[in-house]
Length: 368
Image: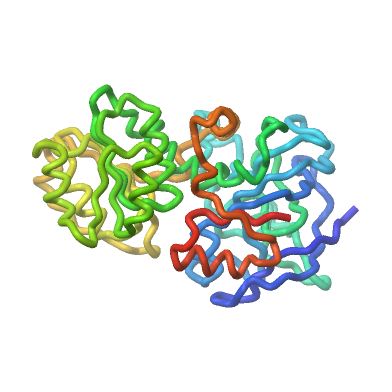
């Protein structure tokens, strides 16, 4: 049976989130109805809500959900009613990248997660007053008291871990962690530089602190965030409101450059500085996403020392493996994610948005 629930709807690009009653379709064969307990707010949600991406509006966003399964479709085998689940991105499961353990690079990733607003077959998951709304965002649309989620978006998690403490694992945290663990893979004595100390960047700092990297350098313009980065494992920090980045990194690395750089700001000028700061055979991971069509100029000869620039989506994570491992690290206190989180009642979503945009809050988590 269809389910009526309350959701935060974006009516048009640039409009605020408006609480509204919507109707969820009954679960399809590979879908589950999830009662949401918490959901993270991510810059991608804000980018779509602003009209910066061609997602169909009015629509329901949200893609860092955490909740309890209430019902499942007839073909669902991975979860059952009563299970605690984390919601992440979805994927087809059949293309070469999905079969190879890289579902974040699914051949149909963009329409299934970010742009389509409907199931793969074109049918809608959410309606209001008989009119279809944009939904199926990252296979979940979790800015709602209940969400209709793809089975491939769901990861069963330890019920002893508070769901609000792990909701951000679905996107931002696994992106920062995956940049370090799945791409950079620091060797003993490596230098890792993280450009930007937001939720993704600080997740990268925490991940680097769990590797053999010797120097972990956090870079930002906000002193409070740099102080937090130090508490989370950074061995050095650079305040670019007061220091020249190139000079500071040269001093920290003894002129050798960085073995790995994680670029989270989406600023192409910062990206260029990160590439220039790489050591021979160093790697820069591009995580921050500027508007579509943005280009960056690079010194081609400067790349000939074996430098690599790697784009990244969602940490290149295989969620069924990565997320339970991260949940365990959170539970054991080895990934202190709570240091990033501020909680808000679901009805205060617009205040959470404002606090995130102003920098007052690093990672807002909405509570239901």
